[in-house]
Length: 109
Image (cartoon, rainbow, N blue to C red; front, top):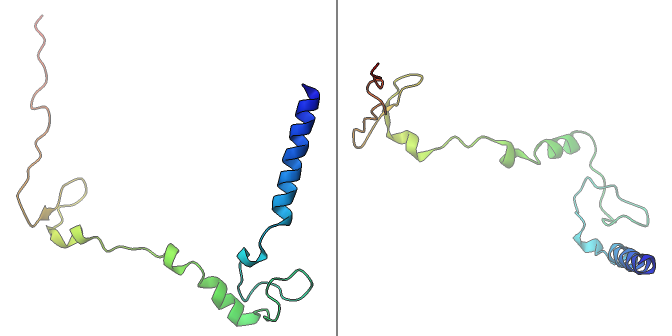
């Protein structure tokens, strides 16, 4: 059992190392803020962003994802808001929601 586990572990390790070694550098992210230069840089020839330009680019990275989208088409139907805990009056059919229980169950003694 032990030789089988050792062989399986070695094969798994070789497969993992092969995957890491053959990674495609073209799939790595390319953006102006990545450090340029050196043998292992994937964006040779690009300069680093510094100062105000780098701060503006960093601040604008996630604007679309982080902004609120408050445009709900159903909100256009609201005619009058009734307040907390009450349904608003809307265009369309007048739907009234009745409470599920009108009176308590009476127990005979």
